[in-house]
Length: 331
Image (cartoon, rainbow, N blue to C red; front, side, top):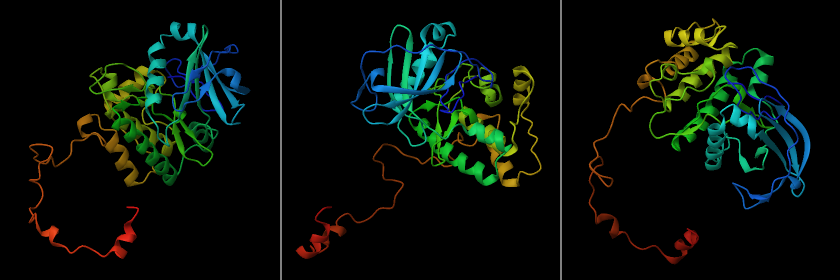
């Protein structure tokens, strides 16, 4: 899927493929005030000074803006409503707002405010000024093992958090990972993210990162994010994705074949980790496997899996003096 790419690193969903689409969007008009999603603050565009355009795309533009009251910087995503409708992106826009309104995690970009007028949809978001991980990967060619494992560990934390809220991300790739000014990650671009309790059958994502079950329309769930992590680790450490071709159909064929060819410089442990993520059978895929031991539990308060102890023994202890209780007065 293409993205708006720029210094803000905030992406606006456009079409399939990894190349960015660029088009111009006019300056947004001023909306009426609307309540922030994460604070009690009410914003209008009159509250914001526009500093620069930091990204453009098929149906929108990202502005770096500065709050006149607090002097804080934000990224303002403005999307042309007619183009969103023409490209059938309405549901993706709603998904992004719904998901970002619910989540709060140090490795996920924050959404502060949304609104619309008769021309534009607006999303006021955290400005992550370190840029895209993709840019650093492209300039370096590939990352060292230690760099790849650092970013992978933070991504695992972000994905686990999303999954704990029954949210599937579905668009993990270097372009959607930002770095803050301290070098830590932020996942962005939640247009394909979805609240999911069962499976979904929508074909979406970037071809090189699609899991086999997505391509085969078998219905998919959280396991697709772990597949994508395996692809990402490979790309970070090799400098190219494990499955690539000149056209999406060729990519899909290679994904379904599941044949991995590793560059020689990757060590055994890295290869082993990648192989465990890139398992075609999602029931055996790392991150999605069933626990090896499932305890026998008959009800929520079942104690049969613990030893039994005398119940009255602990009550025989002597009360402690008042001076000792002073140590715990604020407990």
